[in-house]
Structure formats: C-alpha cells, structure tokens
Length: 574
Image 1 (cartoon, rainbow, N blue to C red):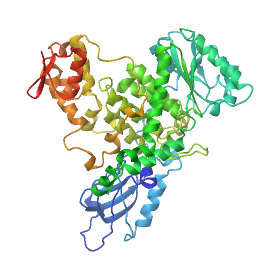
Image 2 (cartoon, helix red, strand yellow):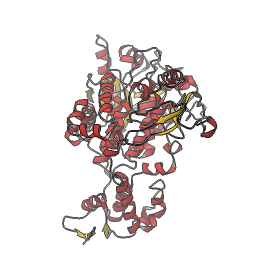
Image 3 (cartoon, rainbow, N blue to C red):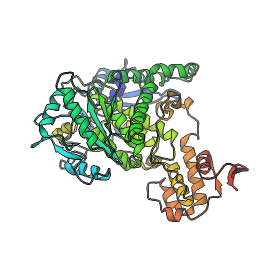
Image 4 (cartoon, one colour):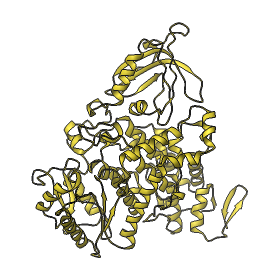
C-alpha cells in the first residue's frame, strides 16, 4: 500500500536508471493490465530492482493511483523494506510526486475502492432496522420489551450522531428526550448503545461523558435501565478503558515494531536476533495486545460468572472499545468464530459503529482532529491470532484469513475500509464489504482461510460424543501467554521462516490424516473446508491412527491417559 510506502520503510527496492548499459524495456513489452479505476501516473524505464536476500533484476517502475509496480511483477508488501535511488532518472521527480500524492490521499475520492459493489442500492449492513432486529432475535430477544431499535432520522435524535448508523439499539426505557440530552453530554455524542446479549446479560459500548452536574444523573438512569433489562437484575459492570492507550500510542508502538521486524540482510537480522525479545518488548505492542485481551477477560467474567451486563467506556468510543467489545463477542459466541460471523461482527462493531478507518489507515482527517494514522484494526486481528494459537480447534477460520483482512484493509480497494462511518459511505455513494475474501484473493490462497483443525475436532466430537468445541473461551490475562505474530510480521524475512514448515504444513498433515481415516470427507478436504461437512457420514469410522500434534491434542482430550501410544512414527489408540 502506498500510504505505508512513504511514511514507513516497509520495503526495500533499489532502482537505478541505466540509459545505455542495459537493453531497453518498452511499454509494449510488459503486461500493462490495470485494475478497475487504476490509472498509470508516472513511470521510469530500465530500472534495477532488488529485494533483500534476493538478486537484482531489471524492469519498468510504474506509479499508479493504487500502487507502485515493477513490471513484470513486484507489488509492495507489508513489512518489506525497500530503498529507492532515482538520482539518475529524468522522471524521478514526477514519480515521487505521484507517490506522495496517492500515499496521502487527503480525501476518499483519491482512493481506488475497486471492490465497490456496483448495485448496492443504499444497502449497508446494520444501517437498517431489519439488521438490528435480526441480531436482537439471534441473541434471544424476541420482543422489544427490554431493548428497542431507535432511528436517528427523520423521527429520531435531534442531535445527529455522525459516527452511528441510522438505526441502533438502546434500553427500552430510555426515551427520546433522554437521548437528546445524552447526545449533548457524551463525547462525540456516543452515548451507551447495545451491541450483544447472551443468556439474559448484555454488552454495551459508550464514549466517556462530560464532567458536569447533569451527565452523572443521565448515566445513572442508563445503568438502572440496563439492570432492569438484565435477567438477574444485577447492576451492570462499568469498565472504563485505559485512557493512556490512545491512537498515538498505538501508532508509535507499531512504528517501533515495524522497524524491528524489517530487515535488509541476513547480517542485520542476525544482529537483531541477539536481543530480539528485549527489542520486541520495548515496542510496547504486545503490552497493548495483552491489555485488550485482559479487558475482554474482565468483561467475560462479569457476563458469564457474575451474570451482570457490561458497559464499556472509552474516551471517544471509537478504538479500543471496538477491540474489547469484539473480543468479548468472539469468546462468548461461537457464531463469531466462523467467517460468516466475523463478517457480521466487523460490519456491526467496526463499520456500522463508526471506527474511523479513513483516519486510522489513510490519515484522512476530514477537517477533524481524528486523523491519526494508527492500526487499531491490526491490534484486533493480532488479538484474534493469539486466541487461535491458544484455542486452535475453536475457530473455523485461520490466521491466514486475518492476514488477508489486514492486507486488504491497506489497499484501499474496500469502500468500508476507506470511510470513517456509514454516513461517509452513503455520502460518497460507494460501499462494499471485505467479505467474501475469496473475491479478492486467488483460489490457492483462499483455501488457507478455513481451519482444518476445527474440522478435525468437529469430526472427532461427532464420532465420540465428547465435546471439543467450547461455548466460552477465556482470553489470556498474562503477557507471558502471548507471542509475537510471526506469521504476519516476519513473513517477508526468509531467515525467520522454515522452508516447507510451519502452520501450513501442519494443516496439510492434518488434511492427510483426516482423509486417511475418513475418506468420505474427501470433497470437503479438497477445498480445505470451504464446503459443508456431512458429519454423519464423515464420523462413521472409528478413530484408530492419529497423526500430527493437533490430532494428538484432540485425542488426549477424548481418551484417558495411557490409551495413546506410539507406533513407529504414528500415534495409535489402544
């Protein structure tokens, strides 16, 4: 992504203009195919191109309104370091000016947004009453006795909340006059709204309210209404998030992380390896991830163990509250541990409830002071990756789907990730979701999005009757339980990766083991789980031989100690 390219040294390319000593590469000799809406703005011919750890090659450098491209192929990739030397090129100034212009687009009109839905007709998830009604019913609220759907316009709040969707859910006892007063006393007018329920307890999100004589009285009324809407009638737990974790802090931690995870040579990588853990700790990134998971764990304890609802408060209610709220729902609701559920969760808690993607990813301020470039969305994805590592059987999607989401968010191709609210999307008359991910990635990579371990667990669970898929996940509360997300941050450093190893090879071994024991699952396995599994058929064969450490983990959950033994290079149940 060009925004990363200019502000961050994510890549390393050496371009040298050689007018005489290399054969020319004309425009007609390369594939000039462009994406929809992509425009070629500047180019330099006969350039030397080289990545770290690889030999140089030659070609043509092209700057478009979407990317910096080396033809035949070299696209910018996150956390790669590139160096540009265009001192000998006559077109260097023009190229750099175009890079600067498209790297900081200033307004969404300058973002390509080629993933827009052509026939959207104003339909945006969770911007209509039907979406919220469906979510309320899915969470067990068949009537609006406890919660009601409120419209902002034309019969809703007089104070239009720009970062809220047109419809949202509030306690049924809160009347319109209360909303008008709260909109005046809460930061960005983001008063408490409902996002999710489970077993009679609910989760709400809010910004902080102003310090004056009226705000505490209004907040007390919200607390009483939420308590009456709770089955146990316990007062809700109020969680005020750490005000020190700001977008600025997230941005500075990410910049330090990026510098440490970007290497130009084997020598540089080896020198950093000596004090690697200390360097990573100094970035503060894992501390932010740990805080979000701990805050989610606190909320889950209140919801599950103490049967009381939770209201999450944050300064402006746009960043860390979205992370914590989403993590709570993922850990307490199996639906959100599927790709379909993840799509719904991002559409609801991030897009509809106004996370400022344009501000945080592209630095588009829109005339406000919210234009701070900070990868809050990456913090959320990192937290999920930690949960997938700790609970590999509980998610139907993998960390590859999360990496794809992050890469996609940086391209500007998805309108939902290029706007700061639903209001902005509708005003631009362009909208589009990142899902399904398969429409943005080729088939071979898309197959990695489905979690083969979850499929294996489902098959074993059906065959044995022993529950392996949990309703509730408990996030780690100690930073000692976390690891750097190497698969995302170190993927471009060959020295940090094992050839023909890693999670992908584990999944392939798992696929082979499942096919050996359950041949009827062949159609499913051929697509790595992208089709529905016939568990009745797939589970008809008893488990005899189990391979890979993941299947061993499943087996040890099912069978008592001592019933699993080694047989050659395999594991057999006695």
